[in-house]
Structures are given as C-alpha cells and as structure tokens.
Image (cartoon, rainbow, N blue to C red; front, side, top):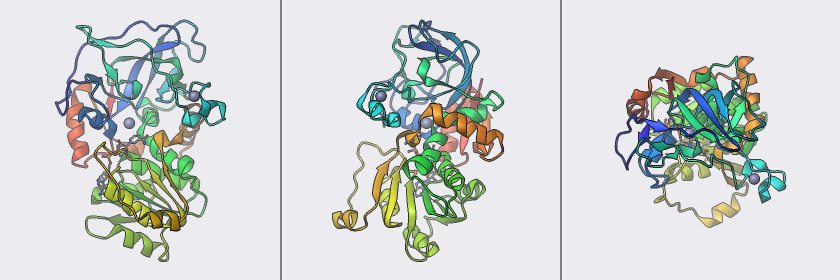
Length: 354
Ligand SMILES: NC(=O)c1ccc[n+]([C@@H]2O[C@H](COP(=O)([O-])OP(=O)(O)OC[C@H]3O[C@@H](n4cnc5c(N)ncnc54)[C@H](O)[C@@H]3O)[C@@H](O)[C@H]2O)c1
Ligand SMILES: [Zn+2]
Ligand SMILES: [Zn+2]
C-alpha cells in the first residue's frame, strides 16, 4: 500500500523486495494495523520522501535472513519494531537503549516495479505481503498470540502503554488523565490500569471513543466538546489535577489542557505527534512554578526486546486485552477506507490481514 503524493489516496502497487543482505531479514506479514501515523505520512506531515510504503504495526513470520543474522531464524514469529537499537551510541552506552539515537533499518531499499525507491513508514512498510527490515527490527514473541493482536504492539499500542508505564512512570494509586482516546490513548489508559492507577480519566470529543475508553479501564470520562476538560479533571481529583496527564492527540490546545490539568509536581507526557506548523504558548512562570516534568514519549520509551514479549504474556494471561483494540479486520485494498473511518472516529484499529 503506497502513498505517492501529499493527500493523494493510497493504492496497491507491485513492489520489489530484495533478498536480505547482511543483517537484514524478510518477513511475511500476517497482520498490520492502520495507525494515525500512516495518515500523517500520507498527508506529508512527517516528511516529503514520497512514495511511502505505509504500515508499521505488524506481526508475521521471518521468511529469509541475510548473512550474519543470529537474532532470528526463518520461521520465527515476530512483531516488527522501529527501534532496533545500535548498542553503540551514547544513549545505548549509557544504559538507556530506549533512547537509542542510531536505530537500525534495512540498508537496501524496496522499490516500485520501475525501480523508484520506496520510503518505508517508520522504517517498516508492512502494508505488503513481504517486507525487508533490519533483523533487529524483528522481536520474537509467543506464537500463541494471533497476529492481529500481537502486531498492534509494533507501534500505537506500545506507544500508548509505554507513555503511561515508561515515560509517565505511573505508580499504584496515582491519578492519570489521557487526552485523546484513539488507539494510542486507549492503550495509555490500559497501561495506567496495568500500573495500578486508581483514577483514570479519558478525555475525547466523541462519546463512542469515551465508551471504549471505559472498557479499557477509564474510571471517568469527559467529553471536551461539551465540558471544559481542565475544570472537569480538577473536579475529579479533589481540585488538584492528576499526577500524570498524557496528550495522545498531538495538538497545542490539547497539550495546554494536559499541562493545566496536572497537579503540582506532576508529569505531562506528549505522545501524540504534532505537525511542523504547531506552536505552544505557555506562561514560563507556570512551567517553573508547577514543577514536575514535561516529557515526550517516542514509541512509549519502549525497549522492544523487553516490552513486546512481556505485553504478549500479559495478553495471553488475560490481563491485557489487545483484542479490544481491533475494531475490524480488513483487506489490503481497504486501507484508504480505514483512514476515513479513523477520521470519522468509527474505529480504534482497523487491521489488515494477509
Ligand atoms: N509517540 C509515538 O511514538 C506515537 C506512535 C503512534 C502514534 N502516535 C500518534 O498518536 C496520536 C494518536 O494516534 P491514534 O492512532 O490513537 O489516532 P486516533 O485518530 O485513533 O485517535 C485520536 C483521538 O483524539 C481525539 N481528539 C481529537 N482532538 C481532540 C481534542 N481536541 N480533545 C480530545 N480528544 C481529541 C479523537 O476524537 C480521537 O479519538 C497521533 O498523533 C499519532 O501519530 C505517536
Ligand atoms: Zn544506540
Ligand atoms: Zn504507528
């Protein structure tokens, strides 16, 4: 599924996937979720390197490996990640590989039939029967978890869960507000529940989303199209605000709401992805005076080798409901329609099944 130009509908193309070179692997994709980030790519919000091969929340089987690949073998069941850590950069050497500044992607390029090089979304490009990645982008997980569920960990769900448990470091008994209850926000809600938060407030503009947020673990919901969400969050937390406020939209207005809905010394986490034109205007005295932390969360500060198998195990034990994120399974030719459904708020995740 290829996006050829800014805003143009995506379409199916024949692509050429090279045999894996040193350190690379080819994966037969079994399922891949439709993420808002795919839409950002199509809209030119991430870069102008068209054509993009979209799709970055996928699970599948390794079908070929290149020279020197030891971490995975043909037949392994894997979730694809966009954080194949290098082990050598200053973050990795400092023992914080989830901040790795030099993550690996495949060295070779997949192309269109005419030889035009494709830019795979987030270095993955999994709306395709086969995709070429760096072997480190393949994280082995328990094959008992179906690909429709496991694949979601590859991007949005991991980003949301990690925004709560890794970046926000939600603790038992804390209060959390999540602004934007799409796939990412609902995953942050589920993550806050896993971490033991006792007040979890979902904020969205859409009542359907708020209903799903409750299923994921929100103890309260606020419709920000009718109610001032900052006021509402404060009322639900004894007038103080939440310990952790998560912006899972990526919009200046929402970020400012998250900033203001947080208790003194609380944490604000930005996991929604803004576009290049966006600016914020906050009283610097409040940034100082309210204390705490303002953090952004790339991929939920996850370490795939640590976090994917853990979340798959929690899923298989019935403690983390990945299936609840799957609104529908679709064919590859329905991605454009899935974008429209996402836009209309009808789905959490449409998942392409091969
Ligand atoms: N940080 C990361 O690593 C990472 C990873 C994946 C996705 N993302 C980003 O996370 C964001 C959410 O992705 P998604 O797939 O959940 O998208 P989505 O479209 O499914 O969800 C967005 C939700 O925000 C709600 N919303 C919009 N404006 C709002 C407002 N003013 N107040 C409250 N709610 C509002 C929408 O109704 C919708 O429910 C996107 O920006 C996406 O690019 C970030
Ligand atoms: Zn590194
Ligand atoms: Zn994504």
